[in-house]
Image 1 (spheres, rainbow, N blue to C red):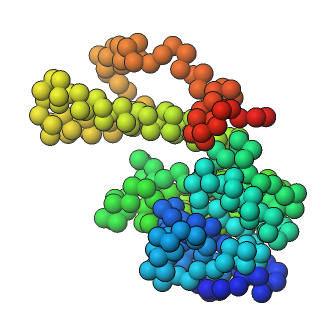
Image 2: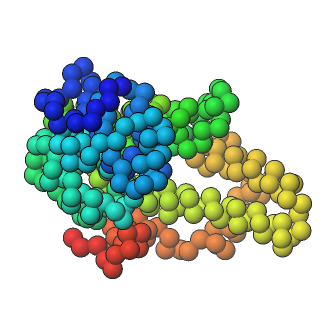
Image 3: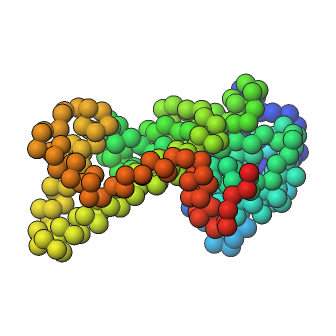
Length: 298
C-alpha cells in the first residue's frame, strides 16, 4: 500500500485497478475494519479521523492521518465509515469538496434512502454492505470458524448499489467493496431502495429479531421451566441448525409432529399481518425510527 498525506497532488485515476481511496471515520468501529483491509492492498489510501480516540487508534495501527479536505479532493472514491446519524452533516461538509466524477460510498442504505445525504450532480452516490459469512459456509480453518462477522478470514458476499451506468465507475466500486470486506466471494448489485429493503427489513427486522427471540426463549426455558442451561443450550443450538437448514434449503422435511408444533408457534407468536413490514410506508416508518426522524419525506 502506498500511503500519502496529500492525495490531491496526484491527477487522474489509478492504473491497473489501483485507486485513490479516502476513508472518513477511519478510527471508528467500522472504519478500523475497513482500514485494516485496505492496508493490505495496493490502493493509495488516505485515513481521516476527527475524534482523539479514533486518531490514536489509527496511529497505533501504524497508519498516517490526512486532513479531510486534502483526502477527499484527490480521491477516486470516498468511503464514509461514520454512523448513520452523522452522515448528513459529514456529507454536507465533504461532498462539495470531492473531485468531479468521484464516488461517495456509504456503508449502510438508511441515510441514502431517506434522502439525508448531500448530493452533487457530478459526484456518484453508492452504497455497499457486507452479507456476513453464510451459516452454510464450508469453513475449513479455526480462523474461519472464529470470524462470524466477516472481513477477516471467513469469505462472504456483499451487496452494492451505484447510481451510474458507467462501467469504469462500477469497477472502482467493485474493487473497493472487495477490498474493504475481504475476503469476498461475490458482489450482488441492487438499487439503493432494494438494499434498504434488505437491511433493515429482511435481516434486522426479521432475522436479527428472531436471533434475539431465540436467546429470550433459551432464558425462559432455563428460568421458568427449570431446564439445566447446558442442556437447553445444546438442544437449541443443534435444532436451530436443523431448523435453518430445513427451512431455508429444504435439506430434510420437518416431521408431521414438528409441523403441528410450528403451526402452534406461528398462531401464538406471529401476527397475521406481519408481512406489512415489506410495504414502502412501513419501511419509511422503520427507517425514520432508526434515524431519529419524525418522518421520511419523499
